[in-house]
Length: 393
Image (cartoon, rainbow, N blue to C red; front, top):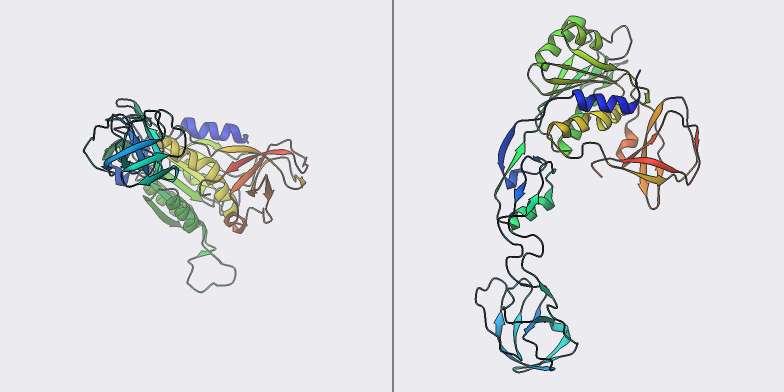
């Protein structure tokens, strides 16, 4: 049994090869990882730009100026101001080259064609310099950036319409267990509704991974081998829930080895998620997650999600973490490292009720996981703890 840090390192070092590159339109780039640096084709802003509604003046040190015109946002004309002249100007408009400052409209008095300044002026006041945000030929966005809405807005402002990205992985979710029935059907005694497949597929969709499928397998050794063989040959990543423990009907581990999957590790010294399996076959990464939903989702966030980001070539693959004070005392049960569903708010983090590996309800309220290392015993209120931020919050 290996520790959590070793497990993650093995996942990232033996994981699926990085995805192929492709070109997508900017409108379709959300959630992809940039492959090449994007070079700015222009200065932004492309001209001296007014930062507010007001008056552009060619200041001469006096209080009074003569109004000689107006410059609207988007206007192409460039009035030439003599010393002591001013024009009405609006936010985003091009400031005349002859203007030395823009005075906000609340700080002037206008009488006909006469303008009086009510505050001292300073050179370049309220003027955004040409290229203030970025200069032409500078790197606008670096290779490895996970493209989010703000990135799309920034690149669109530079007139960019297409970017090179890495493909996202195709993912199969394999659900095992004779005790499972589909929601919406009668529930016989001794059975439970299947939820792991829906949970993992929804989580993947939430994180931008749409190329997913769900495969069901009965607790039968030969059937397990056949379906796993077929599934592994068609996708980049296989995520199996259940069947990786040591029960009489847990066939997944044995079936994976029988069809030639290379076992990288099996079992991690952690709670929840001890039975976690990770292996590879013919370029496909295979995870065997525990069947308990709380443990399955925990292992997904800590191990599967970083592999998916690594496949895309992201610069940062692990979930971000911070050191945050614990809001109440907590006594650790067991000698394994623990990932505890938690809510970070205010100045600290609260460990939630419902930490059982069979329970997933608390994940609906959690925005973080508190990580406690193997040697933890009791954590006192106010003590700093490693708090892993969940990606959907």
